[in-house]
Image 1 (cartoon, helix red, strand yellow):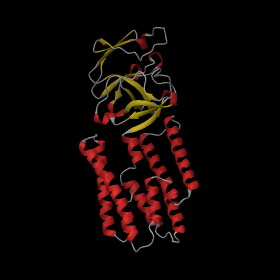
Image 2 (tube, helix red, strand yellow):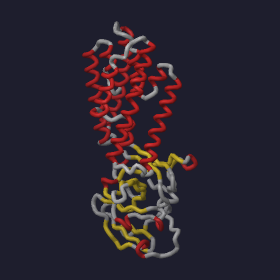
Image 3 (cartoon, helix red, strand yellow):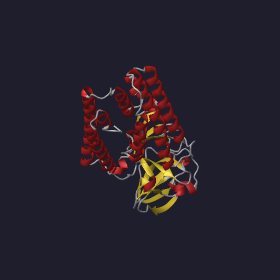
Image 4 (cartoon, helix red, strand yellow):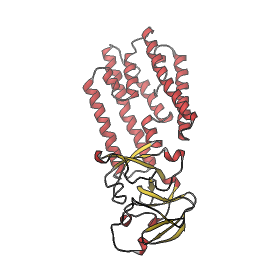
Length: 340
């Protein structure tokens, strides 16, 4: 997949391999470019072309290897399987314990990385998160590929004399080619987050794990009632709030009751646990939401720091729309109190 056409080159079909390499990677780049602009018919078509071409290249490489006079291609089949998903090459080599160990190790590394980023322990910017993901992918993938090749080579009584070439190809692909599917999904489609505070109770409670769709706002605009995740630069972390006002809306708060364009908003999800009246918190003079900005509030109104205190959220800082809870299992599913 990452090195489409490599199997053809190994079997002596270099021209064919180079053509496949160029065609597949160009189609992947074109598909990703269209997909990130929105889920258009052209993007769907190119994604289908990519999937079909990847399958065809793998099938073609396997068919050629059956009739090729060159040395056994099984070590490279192990490598290709590991590129598709780390540990598949080890399973192909019948090294079950090693494959399971790699699988558990990968899950642990990425879970730990995601956990510490979500909780803010690593305190990374978005750019630093991308770099960390890329480095982790390379650190994990290269040793797994080398091990899959060497193990199969020993079984086939072959010397792994092309391992270095493979490593160089993988590094080049990972830096200058399209991102891996997992990173592309996390960056442009969906991402997991967790709730660190009680500001969104009872809709979301502390330590809820949730999925955030980034695709929603690539094909549309944020709307009133959406629960959104956004980057809050002042505290260098992500916040989760409910979107109350969109650009052009006139917002006013009178004794805890929210008015949008002079109409009181029905908010069954909002709770007020403090019976005291605090003018700075419970009243707000009428203001208009500027273009490209949004007014947000927590559902736990008396214990939420939000746009009432630090102003509007920039459109560019909105990460995506909260769609569901995935953990704990007892609360998994559609978010209670969510407004579509």
